[in-house]
Amino acid sequence: MGALTACGAGGGHDAAAPAASGAGASGATAARGGTIGGPGSACRLPVTFALAERWKPESTVPDSTGSSASPADDLAAEIADALLHQGPVTAVCEVDAKPAGHLGFLRVWTGEPGDADARSVLQAFVGAEKGASHATYRAFRTGGLSGTEVEYRVTSELLDETKTERALAVGTPDGPVVVHLGGLDDEEHRAMLPAYELAKSTLRVTAS
Image 1: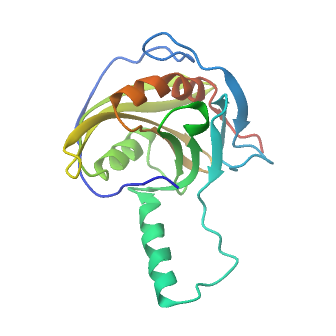
Image 2: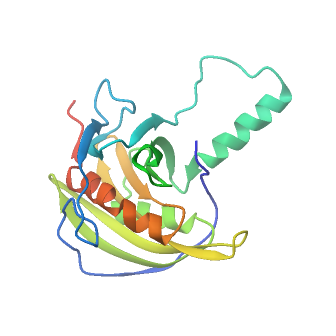
């Protein structure tokens, strides 16, 4: 599983919402592969959406069928559990772009049902990412869902560099869902945007 981050702060402002589409900023589109989220898929989610071709999904929900064999295993499990949480949501699915030739992930995070709206969930998510800043929020609609999207910058103190990340949040009867796109750097992020836009434009509440 890729490196998940937690803790930090980020501010933000509003921008006009672009129309939902399967194309990235360059106008490139992603070839459609399978669909994730429904029964029988690699990750059972409150929403479903289309994956770009060759992107590989994997559940990040810990296996609770067994017990740790030693204190070291317990510590490792505790650290892993901490990395799976960011703000009010927990990472439940990770879609790897490496099979498609990119270095990055599309990650899905879910939260408990409640009164929090999509924007407040997304603001808390960004605020919990270390080094996050310059967040721009916008509202969007797709597939009968209303949500909020954010584009922001993340600075790594270790690597001494800054890159762009994106995320969106929607509310469902089963709780909020955040879909996040990172990437090794800005070039990889731009190359993966069509896959993110495909997911966004095909987002639907999972049929019960």
